Image 1 (spheres, rainbow, N blue to C red):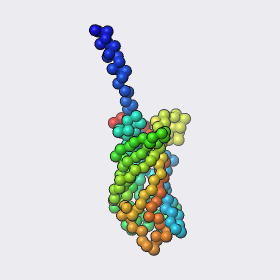
Image 2 (cartoon, helix red, strand yellow; image 1 turned 135 degrees about the horizontal axis):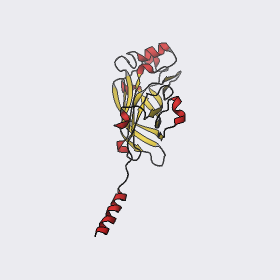
Image 3 (cartoon, rainbow, N blue to C red; image 1 turned 135 degrees about the vertical axis):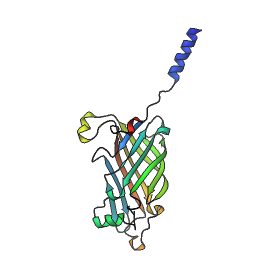
Image 4 (cartoon, rainbow, N blue to C red; image 1 turned 90 degrees about the vertical axis):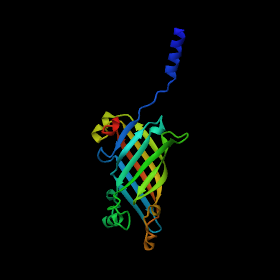
Length: 209
């Protein structure tokens, strides 16, 4: 009986799945060139592109257990630049994004799920916040985890790395941003956003939670 019990215990031990530990990656603490977020407005007579290299947030990731995974990221409105200072000031004003009242644009997942038959592809279900208005959004993103690379540490790539890329559309009217009729030919109601960000494990306090 003891032998049978030992065999059964061994079978149960090896039958228990090994759960990968959730890894926490900080966004925005490793210097320049780790954040590249842009939006593009294509209207009838003008195309505008805004870009920022500033963001902060956290990627909480376990590819084997999506229920434990999530992403949250925020961008300071005043960090977004279009290449024309006067236009930037107009964008920050109360007539547009109103950076004084709503200083950040952000996205936070409520759940994630893998995309079938696509490596590193995930659907991020969450809330996009802009101009004080929250909207439910679904974004397809590529999320790649990379082991630490000592040869890259001098460039700010310290610790384990996660690389997140995505492209999605935002309807600014749905966030309460009204485009004056006299500017409708120059400013699109829907802008296309592209995200290319890196997160790292070397920054506390998040990584050991």
